[in-house]
Image 1 (cartoon, one colour):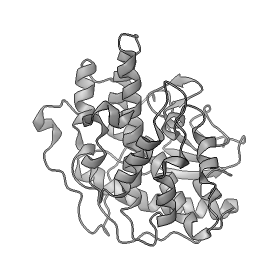
Image 2 (cartoon, rainbow, N blue to C red):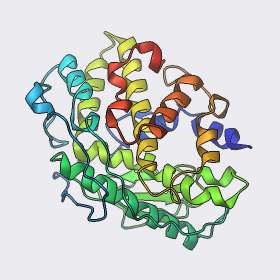
Image 3 (cartoon, helix red, strand yellow):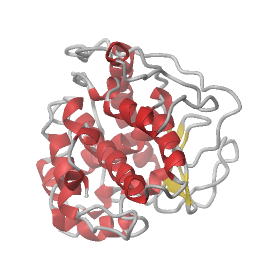
Image 4 (cartoon, rainbow, N blue to C red):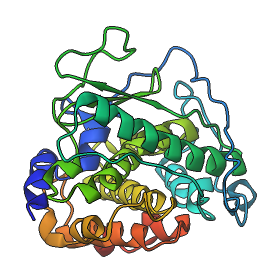
Length: 325
C-alpha cells in the first residue's frame, strides 16, 4: 500500500495535516487563516431526527468553573494563558458522547472520480456529518450551521467565495466567512488506495477532519486556543507554545476519527483504511516546531476510531506531554 506516499506529501509542510489547516501562508492564525469576520457568523442549531440516541453530556462545564462560554471571534475571551488552558481542558466538546446516526448513504465512488462523482460523495458525507454535529452541538447548547462543500479546479477559485487567500492545490480550504469547504479536484486520501471499496469512507474521514475547522470556529474553541497561542507568542514559554499546537492538532485528528465511526458500518472508514491510518509507518514526524511523532499521531487516530464516540477519550489537554510529543 502506498498510502504513506500521499500522507508524506500532505505532511511534509509543518509536520501534520492539522498544521496545513491551522496555519497557511506561514502565519499561525486562529482557524484556517480566516480573518475575523465583520459580524458574528449566523449559526442555527440543527437536530437529527434519525439519531439512535442523543449525545450525552455529564456535567456542564460552566458549573465546574472552567470559564467557557461561546464568544464572538471579534470579542476575545478574557483571562490569561491558564484561563484559556482551563477552557480547553474542560468544555462541552470534551464531555459526553457523539450521537450515532442510522442513515448515511455514500455513493460508490471510483479511485479517480470525475468532478461530479467527487461532489456527490462529498455532499453525501457532508449530510451525514451535519446530522452528527447538529445533534451534538444542540445537545450542548452550542451553535451549529452545517458547512457546504464545493468542488473546484485549482487555481480557479470560485469568484463568489468570501475568502480570497490561502487556497492550495493539494488541500481543501475551509472558509468560515461563508461556511464553505472548497475542495480542490485531485485531493483525497482515497486516491492512494487500490480498492474502490475504501474510497467513500476515506472521503468521509477526510471531510470529518476538515469539519473540525467549522466545529472549532462555531463552538469558539479555536478562539480560546488562538488566544492562548497569541499570548504565548511573546517567547516566554516556547516549549508550551509548541506543546499546545501538538495537543490541539492531535485532538482534532482524534475527534475526526471518532466522528467517522458514528455512521452505519457500510459508510464508515473500512478496516483497511483504519489499519493504514493507525500505522506509524504511514506518517512522518515533520520539522520542528510543527512535529509530532509518528507513533503518537497513529495512537490518537486509533483512540478516536475505538472511542465509541466518547469525546473525553480525545481530550489531549489532560495527558502527559510525552503522549503528545
